[in-house]
Image (tube, rainbow, N blue to C red):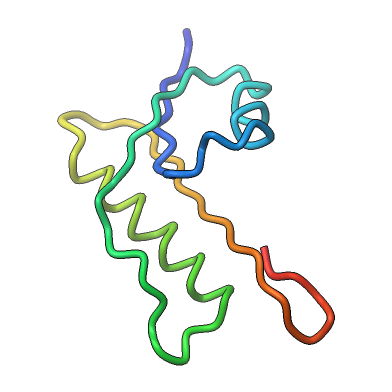
Amino acid sequence: MPVSAHAADPRIEFPRRRDLIASLGILFTVVRPDINEDIRPDESPIAYVERLSREKAAAVAASLGEPDVVLAADTIAGRGHGRSHR
């Protein structure tokens, strides 16, 4: 029996992310929540993507009419201190 998962990520178009989810054998639907993605003052890159993922998951879960699985993610790239944040 296939499992349906909703990927709450406006950048799911990235082929690598789409391929990763598909390689798991999971049927999924992309749901794009309407949330504010502005970074907060003094918010670290890691805290920012963690918060966005939680908020996206919550927004999609609230919009569903029945129990389902919600997969939310976010990615940012930044420079600083000789390494990238993803």
